[in-house]
Image (tube, rainbow over the protein chains, first blue to last red):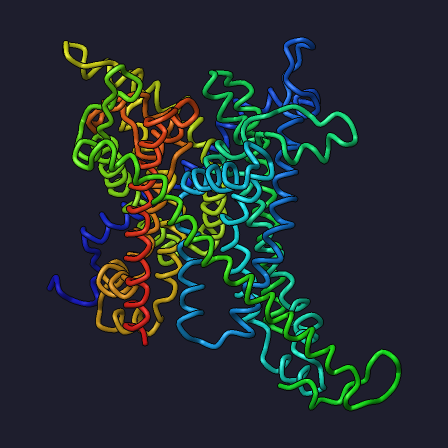
Length: 290
Length: 320
């Protein structure tokens, strides 16, 4: 009688496993809410206009991270200027020029490898290669060059994905009308793949903002603002700690108020970057459907 | 596609078949050359990283001796009679990573199952962005939270557990267990995102067939969906291992500041944290040994990467 299909039975083991599934999901969500909530509660009171616009100085009695914000911007801009053309170019080669074979496999394998190497290794390599061999020392340039190698796979892969979604008819159409290949890439492919490229760039910005281990021994920890006009150019060759580096250093010096203040700024930036990528992904999807 | 065969309307408003096709083909060749060069930079970067890690890591190995360095247990790089044994550092990285994976992977896979299979659509739409945000939070923030929340808790636990022990060195909560918990949280997003994608890729026909045979939802998940998504889930685990073993800044302050055997309540140093905390002041042979530690880490990562590629290849074959 108990075996009747009409009597709806639930297995005990099913219930237990289901309980664990919900428990795990609950833990994951609670962790996130806890992390964000804790950072904001602890840090929001430390973030004010002075914190964001001045430099820490015992003379003036100010505590601020303006210098680190400027350094972070330098790092983002210089890295992107170098990495975007390389990453996009590499994706174009892989998708439009290369014929499948050993070479493409090698390039794809190394790109994959680059994205798996931990940032501390990039830090060591950057310190020796760009810092000592090239002689850039502890500077924003050394840091940017190190980050360039690190975020290259992000740009390459996102551009490649975007190029793959451009229909082949666009290519044959352009070539059939007499366009040269480079003209076709410039006027048809790149504009169609633009939102994918931008997604890659934004993800790269997120990675740069959050990076610390690769920068500790390459970009150093300078926190002063450039003073004169030339100072803004010279800054590139000077040491400059980003927000994350300053967060780490403050934490090591047990200045937890500063650390939590920076943490709030960083979480805020990460939030914006997430929303942006989501928005772009949606846009990309719409393009695909058309 | 030879541009000389193509009729070109050039800028001078003259209609010509030949036109400036020479220029154009030069531009074409140059464009192709530049793109090829860009693509080679990835290869170049990996080769130079490998070469420089080896060049900088090998000298200490030769000078100190392979056995003393890799299997020595005494780490006193700044003593008068320095000793450079990094066995405990290597073991800490291995033990810490394994513990973090054991802790984090089940939660990650179950959350992925929740997101892809059992959750109501609306709830999944809320949880998913939360997980993505977790992936984007900089590692130093995890470190800060570990230091502020976990370490005091661990210290209380330590005081309770070891109150009668005379040999235990109190760490103030900065120990292996704290670091493991931080690492477990940090690998969660990686594991969740990739396993979820793998689970979603399982065709619905398999699920329907399983239901039609009378299996319950949970039975279908355990016996049909998860085995089918196996290669994706293994990829997720391997990537999680890579992330855990390579993480540095989050656990530098959380894991303590001395080299000890990797027991849960010992203050320990990982391969990564040894580099971060000592590179700043290290000189001479000490610095060289830190590069050897980097080389050991690099070898671990390469092994993980290569096994990942072979898993992916096998997965492709299975599906094809």
